[in-house]
Image (cartoon, rainbow, N blue to C red; front, side):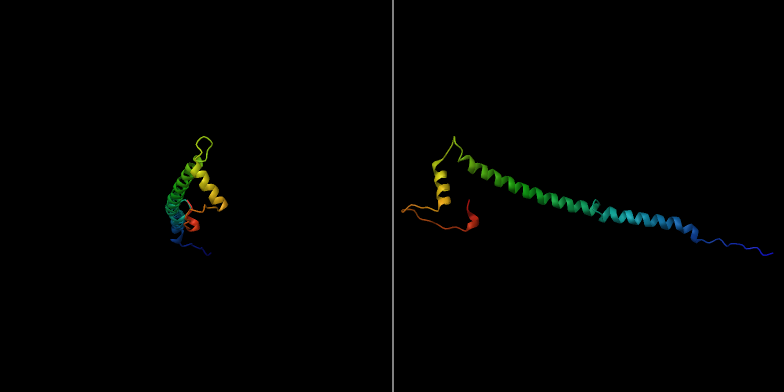
Length: 108
């Protein structure tokens, strides 16, 4: 009668630690490089500062426009402002005036 004896292998002991290392590596990689990881947080903070600067510029522009509009309101209508807007819209000047042409982007 023949009896088979199975020799114990050491590879069975390495399966659980190997799977654990793989899982930890996966989550560690995504904790740094993922959308919500450390690297993603830095990108988000950079985007926030960029958008806040853009928002500040828009607030300044809006304030300037509100100041110009306030000069045209009914209660405080200034003749100079009305005259300037009408001349710009109609492209008119008087005979005794000097016209200085500026670039199109600099019309403030």
